[in-house]
Image 1 (cartoon, rainbow, N blue to C red):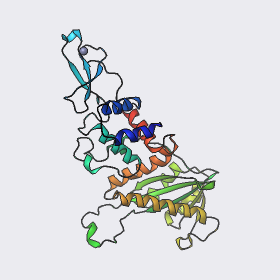
Image 2 (spheres, rainbow, N blue to C red):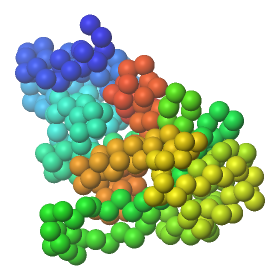
Image 3 (cartoon, rainbow, N blue to C red):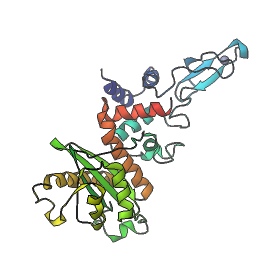
Image 4 (tube, rainbow, N blue to C red):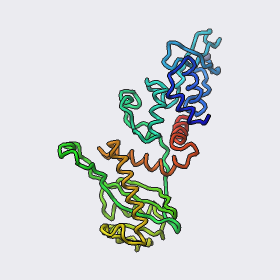
Length: 306
Ligand SMILES: [Zn+2]
């Protein structure tokens, strides 16, 4: 049985007598729980034992002679993602699984929990890919800015008082032949040259072919060593040379916006920024993992708590 099939089975099945141990062992193999723990008092290796009085039904136990055989007990969650949480391991894994499916950044029933209560624990655990660069000879780059605002089709009152965000999402999409794309998404204060150009020079290789609309902030691009193509938004799809590439950007924008709207992730800058991180993480790291998003998520958590 594949790793992930096993996890899906473990998190969905009713916890039987052996259930909690199976999940604990699985989480240990995945390095989400510690495999070995030393007794704080006598430094001996502790043993994993059944404990009825414990929420996880198992705990680390030591009855060392150094403490007169008295039981010293440590949680199976010691130094793990779950250690300050009261939510069951099974619920946690359901949450992690759903997160990996892109269904939710946070789960309503996790909000009261000590850890999950601080909203988006998981998005903070994702390892950031830093210093990404796109472009070069084999990759076109399409750039654009967007507000990512809610469509107000449900009436004007909907966002009353709730709309505080003024920042722009600046997107840079690398497109290789065969239409393979990867995006860099950044929040910028304004869409002025002063705010956009440093982001471009940081992430887009000099000499790249860059396609944008005719926004004046981009006029400087040829002077910076880029091969700059502009498209007029009204002709966005028409130009045969750049049209195909700009369609990729349109499609990518639409998909990011839909994800974020669906999760109501643009209510404030912090939440929006977290969603952008997740989208980027997914494109740059998760999709490349042999076990996909869930595999990469489990890997990132294990690295954080090793
Ligand atoms: Zn001990």
